[in-house]
Picture: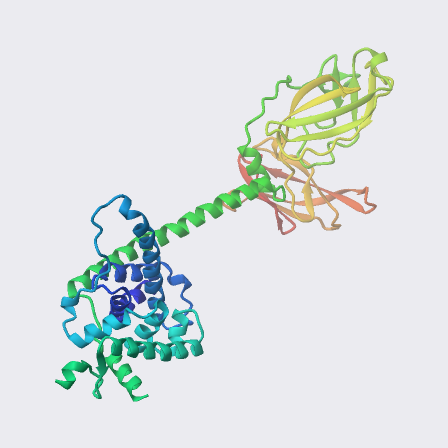
Length: 181
Length: 301
């Protein structure tokens, strides 16, 4: 029964997990992470008590997976100069796939946020998860999520302004110079 | 404030991504593969747990002494012990039949064979010792028994006395009942030194029901002819008791109404009644008795 559920969950929440991972890692190459997330979920199914929404639970797994990889990568980054002369840039945003400029700008701005702010903006702002679910993923309380989201939006706006972008009334982001010209 | 709302709108409008169809299919395949592997594991798991439980139960059963059949199973799994002493023979001492080793040791018995779990045949036994009287009389003796399954019991112990007949020392005693049938080696110690040893065969317990027990042992009865049989009980019946002999298919092969033959006072203070009748075992085999409506377990003759 539970094994059937994981396939159902894949059909239902793959888009959320993929979106989260793309925004969270800054890479379009998240297929492996998506697969790992669902495989881990399948193995840990017995631990899922149904107290949180499956989507919330799956995003938590995906997030932890990225954090684990990031930790390992940090260790690798600290020693790779010893074994290779031409380190490849990892985790680059594949800009060609996100071709709209405003999306790219907003995306870049999000990635200038501190890690926790970035997380809350992705979860609360982009994936539109309720504060309660975000608090479960980030292991914090709802109030903190609300406060953090508000601060993060403020900071995001500042970054966009610093970069010369502003919000238009229709929710689009445009460069000030373009707007005035 | 409006700018913040606009920014939120922008965030909401950011594209959501899904994997390519072939990537999705690839992951679904991987998930299904993992499911199969897991199911295989799940199937194996109960089998493994079951085997483990059986082994644990078995180990516990072997460690436990509480159940008789388990005890038998436990003993049957133990290596058979070689009984080295010679077999007992029957010889005469002052015109009475004794069993043992002629010139060394003899037990005065009414019946030649002991019966497992029976106190009657082991009661009031006379033990005769032949040897150096000065090293026997007034000395401590002990009789120990061991069977092929290494089950050990002390049958009797006490003091040896001066001779009554032509032996050199004697004592009157009772044996602790043998817990089970089979070959038993009896070792006689005087002052903790082995004096003599011999082996005997102990018969299976007497067939019995809740209220009745045979006093005649089926293995000692001849077949294919009517034999007198005594049944013992604490139940008093003036008109006698109906006794049927059943074969292994449950058919009655012999029957008789046993009549009261004697009344005795038991050690407990109550009365014991003997009923006497005649039954015929057609051959050697497995049988059951129905005594006054009560059925015995299957037994062999």
